[in-house]
Image (tube, rainbow over all chains, first blue to last red; front, top):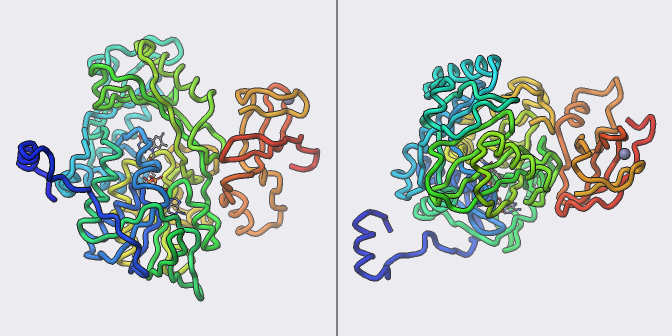
Amino acid sequence: MRYSGFRVFREGLRRNSGWQPLWRDPEPKPAYDIVIIGGGGHGLATAYYLASEHGLTNIAVLEKGYLGGGNVGRNTTIVRANYLLPGNSEFYSHSLKLWEGLEGALNFNVMHSQRGVLNLFHSDGQRDAAVRRGNAMINQGDDAILLDREGVREKVPFLDFDNHRFPVYGGLFHPRGGTARHDAVAWGFARGADMRGVDLIQNCEVTGIDIEGGLVRGVQTTRGAIRAGKVGIVVAGRSSQVAAMAGLRLPIESHVLQAFVTEGLKPCLDHVVTFGMGHFYISQSDKGGLVFGGDLDFYASYAARGNLPMAEHVMEAGMSLMPMIGQARVLRSWGGIMDMSPDGSPIIDRTPVEGLYLNCGWCYGGFKAVPGSGFAFAHLLAQDRPHETAARYRLDRFRTGSGLMDEEGTGSQHNLH
Amino acid sequence: MRIECPHCGERDLREFTYRGHALALSRPSEGASAEEWDDFLHNRDNPAGATQDLWRHDPCGAWLVAERSTTTHQVRATRAVRGGEA
Ligand SMILES: Cc1cc2nc3c(=O)[nH]c(=O)nc-3n(C[C@H](O)[C@H](O)[C@H](O)COP(=O)(O)OP(=O)(O)OC[C@H]3O[C@@H](n4cnc5c(N)ncnc54)[C@H](O)[C@@H]3O)c2cc1C
Ligand SMILES: [Zn+2]
């Protein structure tokens, strides 16, 4: 069913009796050309682009829970292309362009809102770093505007500009950055893949990967064995466990990242604002809640919930930056399982097992990557060679030391990003 | 999360610094191959469930190994890192 203004009008007249489920609920077939493990944003986007760009539709996405129940439905929805290093720059730039055409392509409202991302700086040194990053963004063909203190004040007058420790000197504004509705992104890609014939199979946990003579043959699942010509692992925080089924040990550690949302408020915050010195960022959802978060809890975790010290730190940072936030009540907090790589950048690559492909290492930044990653991973699966935007996301870069993408310049080691 | 320091008793998470999986204690020897170093530095078992990780109790400076669950955050036991172990 295609969505349109006319359809909404017609269903309004017919007491909304004509709406249909967004996707089928098929039984798994005994065999597929390609099996995608993981029905998060990246897995669903991969299936969609395999069908739409490469005409491959004998595909299943196997999801152990429900579609969109992982990080894709737990993140703070920031979409941006303000990376510094070659490799990341072109990849996220491409992903943002896909975002800009996504609603038309999917015929689905993902509520993509380019409200602008504002990164604050608080010293002369940080201003220099912001100029450098802005130039990198402009060289990549994206947009960046350097704002002085007054420029920031015009946009967000309620910040504590004269904070003693971190006075606001200015900000780097990225107008094309913004947010999107996370669930809708999962649903839109799911519907798009299903419409083209992809089987989306929920409550289907992969428990083993069948390999014969170094060649992948299929997977074992809680709903029986499924044969496959190729298998893609796209399971975010669970990457180490699923890769271990194929005898692989990955350069990944799983960590918890928390987020928070307040009660719904009238519109008060027009942009996404990041306060790097306090490890704090915030935006306002279309429902009115202030959505904010901070850094990892910084210990290995699969609990999908965090501890109080980080919650406290995030609240303190919020109060330092934006004292008015103290009047709002926090409604909920939650956590997600992050697949942290040593250099903080992702992996989209083949594995030593023939026919087995890997997409992981998105850390805390993989939501904006959903279209770009699906596009590039579909290309790799279909053509057996990397897409040019993701050619640097190699699994062996840690072993060789060549092509590391350490955006923060802290070193390619676990627990530093 | 509360962690028992072998010297100071059970203390709040805020007093501890995390140093990753306790494999940091089994550093490859000087002549080790590049592959061994790569494995040590980058690759992880990353278990969902029981793990052993390395923490520093900042107030007293002790390094300790915690037996901890990554799915429940429960710390089952801790012990001080012995001299020569690291
Ligand atoms: C609190 C928080 C805030 C964030 N904020 C942002 C942000 O503002 N901007 C941004 O760009 N990114 C953000 N991220 C990161 C982003 O959400 C993730 O990087 C991204 O969603 C991960 O990819 P995914 O959507 O495919 O993962 P998931 O949705 O986690 O998908 C993986 C799926 O694999 C399934 N699976 C696992 N094991 C198996 C198995 N054995 N068999 C079958 N299925 C399996 C899981 O059930 C899951 O549904 C944030 C994350 C969190 C937690
Ligand atoms: Zn102590």
